[in-house]
Image 1 (cartoon, rainbow, N blue to C red):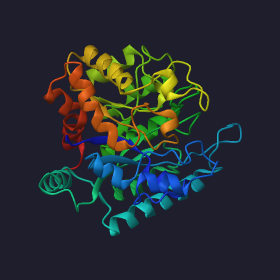
Image 2 (image 1 turned 180 degrees about the vertical axis):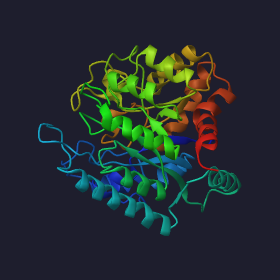
Image 3 (image 1 turned 45 degrees about the vertical axis):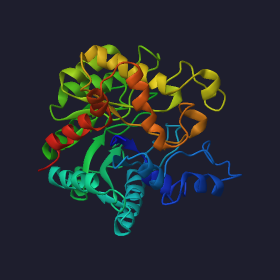
Image 4 (image 1 turned 90 degrees about the horizontal axis):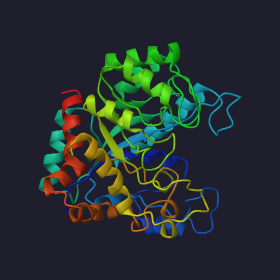
Length: 356
C-alpha cells in the first residue's frame, strides 16, 4: 500500500466547528451524528485519524480557517478580523492538544519531515500523523505582525482568499484584484518564504498574484475548467502558468468540482457517475499538459464541509484514496507515476521549500 500525502484537510474545522472527535472511527462519528441536520454532511463524513492510518495517509497539510466578512458580504463568517484571528487560535489550540496526545506531529522543517518519513517507513503503527500547517484564506491576518506570529507557530503555507471578496484578494464567487493590501501581504509572505496557495483566487487575483509573487506556489485543491466549466477551477492558461513555475496542483474530491452544474443536495454521486475515474480524468488532463506526472498531487478536501453525499461514489472513507492506485494503473500509469502523484511530488516540493 503506497504512502499518501494529502495536501488539503480541514481537520481543526471539523473538530472545533463540527464537534467531531477525530480520534474515533468514521463509523463512530457517523453514528454520533445521526439525526443532526445543522450541516449537510452530518452522518456522512469520511475523515478520521483511524481512517487516515488505514489509508496509509501519514502526512497532510492541515488548515486553519476563519473567514472575515464585511457587512456587504452575505457569506457566513466573523464580523471582524480580530474574531477570525481568535477562531484560528482556538483551532491551533486543538492541534496542540492532539500533539500532546501523540495523535499528530507538526512538521515545520525539512529535517523534521525527513525524520517523520523515515520513522513512518520503519513502523507507522504507533506514530502520530504528520501535518504541515496552512491558512486557508488570509482574512484572519489582522496585521503583518499577526502573520509573523503565525509563522512562529509553524505556519508554512497560506492562501490569500477563500470564498467571496477578502481583505487581501478576491476569492471564489467574486471578482477583483489584490490591491495594495494584497501586495503588502505577498511581500511579507515572500520574506518568510512561505508556500503560497493560489487555490480559490478569482482569475484577476490569480494573475496579479502570479505576477507579484516569485516564491514557491502550489494549488492545494483545484481542478480543471476544461473538464468542468466553473470559475472555481483553473483554465488551461492558468495550469500552464503553474507548470512553468514548477508548481503542484492537488486533486480535490468534492463532486461539485467534478460534475458540470452540480447542485448541492440534489445531484447525487452515483446517479451522476462521479467516481475515482472522474478524478483520473483531471489527473490525465494536467499530465498531458505537463508531459509528465510531476505536477499533480492529492489535495482531497474530503472534510471540507461535505461527505459521501458529495464525493466519488466509490469512496466511503478517506482510506479509499488507495483505490486510485488501481484506477491509474488501469490507465497505463507506471508505479513510479503513481508514487509521484501519491507522495513524491509533494514531498520533494516540501523538502525544497520548507526551512532546513
